[in-house]
Length: 602
Ligand code: EUG
Image (tube, rainbow, N blue to C red; front, top):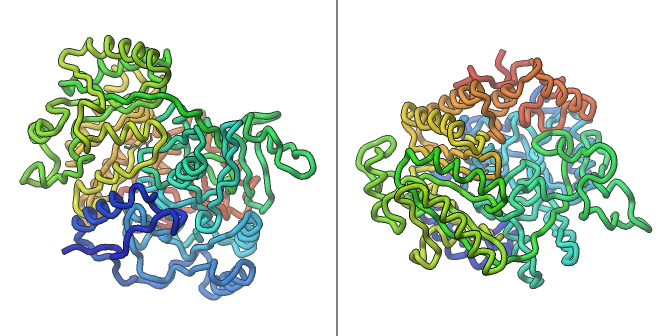
């Protein structure tokens, strides 16, 4: 039985700001069909409860507040969340709750969604939230899947869906190689626009192209061209503070002549005085409504991959990568993946690879991998080199000489591999072309959802191995297949674990939560911390950054209370709770392994 979320074709970007590009129309419809055919849960179920109200707000007060906001910004722009919840799928995702719920589906939900159409309407909504003491939770596109999606941390919060009406590309400056975007601009949209204008510029996209350029950057997401550090490559922001005031950062703090934007706003990030941009990333100190980015001038490029035979080669591979990364011979953010990802990125399901239940055995992975184009191996390094033809050839010789030190390593170019192989998609991503290929992962289990565990590992074999072995051991004990993707930034590696689980299996969700809790704690005990995490694990992760009696969190709380005395803006995001909520049982710690219901625990 297939339960399609919708029978109509996947919306295209011409029709919907957050849709798929036409060039991926067939792929999008196909992947949706495959995901639907692997779904046993109904599209939606009747709601158990009525609207989940914001904390400490009566239903009469809520009604009054909603009425007032509707008067201010339009009835059609304030939607009460009282309908059945639909998880949908990546390209038709909800803005009412976490589509990849790890709590009960109805727990991490909003009371309403607001669609501001301008910066002024964001300011109006912020002032409204202050007046009524209602927590608001801004999203750009809401595709932060694996980290909480569109859900507010405080159930009953009001989601500010910025993307729906604020999705203009405000400027592309071809000479300066930069752009300014609103929250609703996706990688797909920015890419298509640059193609339409025929500009020799690249964007930098993460593995999936449907996310918000602005939203991903303020969450400090990663892409794979030389401009892969998204926050580092931003240049200037405009934001609404929790009291409704407007702020421009960087050179934007200086007005341009005759009321124009400052002419160097997208040229120099740091400007004069304290560099405050960073405090608006992964925080709840302001709502970013405009953001500038540097774009990379297009370049010649060559993608490739290396395979390595043995699991135990891991440490050696990492040590060979380190000098290559430090010397910038590796010019982008390459990925090191375990061969099991060759299976799921091909669209295979766990059930295709064995008959039992639980994770595949190493032997089963070997047997399945042997049938695929890269053949038997353990690790796959996906890289790309940039520059002139000669320079790329020289770089590849250096890299080949290094990796040849590992017996059995093999080198592949895209031309060596059949049409459907993942390396071809990698070549697109690493040259700034957003794709959808990675959605295949979700086919692994029925009702597939995922959660990321994302520690920072040093690019040093013996230390990376400590993290890796803890992760391997935990996956065995909690009975999960391990999908590690190591994104090499340089001196450190974002070690990303994609924990894939079945949303219809409460025991599996419970094991996923326990494994996350344990890994966060065990890694922290060795000094390894996460770079980003799902909403429900943010308190615990924030709690591991506790040097000197939690000086860092106390500093954040000082800023939070100064900027947001009423505690209305995204309370709890990244573990930062305003005074109103702090220490009142909202924090979820290491001990909170039962995450089925979310609310103050006293
Ligand atoms: C990935 C990478 C990330 C992340 C989540 C997913 C890649 C998955 C480098 O950061 O946070 C294939």
